[in-house]
Picture 1 (cartoon, rainbow, N blue to C red):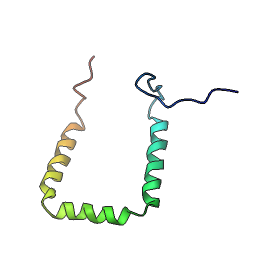
Picture 2 (cartoon, one colour):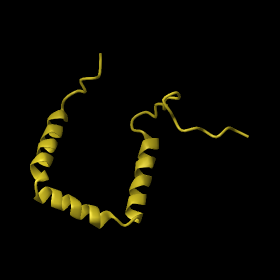
Picture 3 (cartoon, rainbow, N blue to C red):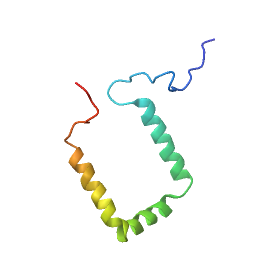
Picture 4 (cartoon, helix red, strand yellow):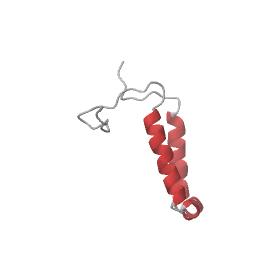
Length: 80
Protein backbone atom coordinates (compact mmCIF):
# COMPACT_ATOMS: atom_id res chain seq x y z
CA UNK A 1 0.00 0.00 0.00
CA UNK A 2 1.51 3.41 -0.98
CA UNK A 3 2.18 6.00 1.70
CA UNK A 4 -0.20 8.93 1.95
CA UNK A 5 1.37 12.17 0.79
CA UNK A 6 2.03 14.73 3.48
CA UNK A 7 1.27 18.39 2.84
CA UNK A 8 4.40 20.46 2.15
CA UNK A 9 6.09 22.04 5.16
CA UNK A 10 9.17 24.18 5.60
CA UNK A 11 11.20 20.98 5.84
CA UNK A 12 9.56 19.49 2.72
CA UNK A 13 9.31 22.19 0.06
CA UNK A 14 6.38 22.21 -2.32
CA UNK A 15 7.09 20.70 -5.72
CA UNK A 16 6.97 22.90 -8.78
CA UNK A 17 3.71 22.38 -10.65
CA UNK A 18 4.72 24.32 -13.73
CA UNK A 19 2.82 27.38 -14.87
CA UNK A 20 0.17 27.93 -12.27
CA UNK A 21 -0.21 25.97 -9.08
CA UNK A 22 -3.10 23.54 -9.33
CA UNK A 23 -2.86 22.54 -5.68
CA UNK A 24 -3.14 26.16 -4.52
CA UNK A 25 -5.96 26.78 -7.01
CA UNK A 26 -7.94 23.82 -5.64
CA UNK A 27 -7.35 25.00 -2.07
CA UNK A 28 -8.50 28.53 -2.99
CA UNK A 29 -11.60 27.25 -4.82
CA UNK A 30 -12.53 25.05 -1.86
CA UNK A 31 -12.12 27.96 0.58
CA UNK A 32 -14.33 30.16 -1.61
CA UNK A 33 -17.03 27.49 -1.80
CA UNK A 34 -16.94 27.07 1.99
CA UNK A 35 -17.20 30.85 2.44
CA UNK A 36 -20.31 30.95 0.25
CA UNK A 37 -21.85 28.01 2.13
CA UNK A 38 -21.39 29.87 5.44
CA UNK A 39 -23.77 32.50 4.05
CA UNK A 40 -21.70 35.57 4.80
CA UNK A 41 -21.37 36.88 1.25
CA UNK A 42 -24.03 39.59 1.61
CA UNK A 43 -22.67 40.63 5.01
CA UNK A 44 -19.12 41.00 3.64
CA UNK A 45 -20.42 42.83 0.57
CA UNK A 46 -22.12 45.36 2.83
CA UNK A 47 -18.95 45.75 4.91
CA UNK A 48 -16.95 46.42 1.73
CA UNK A 49 -19.51 48.92 0.50
CA UNK A 50 -19.38 50.79 3.82
CA UNK A 51 -15.57 50.82 3.71
CA UNK A 52 -15.57 52.36 0.24
CA UNK A 53 -18.21 54.92 1.14
CA UNK A 54 -16.52 56.09 4.35
CA UNK A 55 -13.07 56.83 5.72
CA UNK A 56 -11.32 53.86 4.17
CA UNK A 57 -12.03 54.99 0.62
CA UNK A 58 -8.86 57.07 0.25
CA UNK A 59 -6.74 54.33 1.78
CA UNK A 60 -8.27 51.73 -0.55
CA UNK A 61 -7.74 53.94 -3.59
CA UNK A 62 -4.12 54.55 -2.57
CA UNK A 63 -3.56 50.80 -2.22
CA UNK A 64 -5.13 50.19 -5.62
CA UNK A 65 -2.89 52.79 -7.28
CA UNK A 66 0.19 51.32 -5.60
CA UNK A 67 -0.77 47.88 -6.89
CA UNK A 68 -1.27 49.22 -10.40
CA UNK A 69 2.21 50.82 -10.34
CA UNK A 70 3.72 47.44 -9.56
CA UNK A 71 1.92 45.54 -12.31
CA UNK A 72 4.62 46.20 -14.92
CA UNK A 73 7.54 46.14 -12.49
CA UNK A 74 9.69 43.15 -11.72
CA UNK A 75 9.85 41.83 -8.19
CA UNK A 76 12.89 43.56 -6.60
CA UNK A 77 13.60 40.40 -4.59
CA UNK A 78 14.32 38.42 -7.77
CA UNK A 79 18.02 38.11 -8.51
CA UNK A 80 19.39 37.46 -11.96
